[in-house]
Length: 417
Image: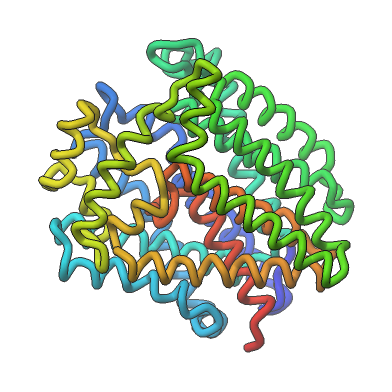
């Protein structure tokens, strides 16, 4: 990779750029949670000791983030101004400690989400969209290759405890499936980009991703992969459409998305029951009913950033007792946003999302030579995933970092300085 618009790397700057790339790659790899969480987990959970180890592992990445942003503080401050709604998410979790039901939990996790979002600023400032595509593919490729090697090296850990599904170096088959689905998307885009000359590498990653996706037997991952294909077709048509056709396609997809969101609690369970499948979406439907009741009890500000699902939360224990299942989150990113930050946080998140979708679509039409298509698809798939998964505003989460970085890159290129 070469230096970006900040300046041509000469002399010692080449060494700095190399160090910068390696450090960022390692920091992102830690954010995936691959290997580390699996090895530290015991009896299906993480104790206080392993959690402290994971926090300590994230510290070098935080240090790298601070060093890079201190060195390039001018473009960092400019990007803060270019996307103020995103910048507010750096402080809102801290502010929520004032009304949190678990202030210490909120503050600790607010620090983690603060540095996770700061890392996205580093990626958006120091890497072009094409470099970011290569970087993200490298990270996902590493997790997929390690997962396949684990079949031979660690067969007792590589598969789910009570089934033949592959989980690789992750704690659950669904997580491996998500990375495989995103690996298919990113490697396909990498292979289609003729300017990089990385087609053999891209093909290898695509094959590894396909194998991991099939061996994981993850239904949600298969849906994610199908969504990626559907959104790729949509954005490819959008890029070539005239203004009137572009408006029609956008309205069609928005209506379809709203219809899907509205049917998750009603139509989808009935359809699954008719097919002989689990009509509760693996326990999500009764969980959502109870979560919705909790949201209505504190609708404006919520319970404090990520304080609701802590062991000291009486509200969470009511739900866990009724379900006889200690759900780690709401299995819906938008509901968890409401639990954490209420309607205030959700409204701010909606502004971030609308800006990202609008700016991304504009760049797709204006700069077709740049890999805006794959970044638009990445954002769209991530947003739909959060209707049944909880990845929004998750600290130390690689997939959330991909989403935020794409949104910031849209703002940096689309918004004038």
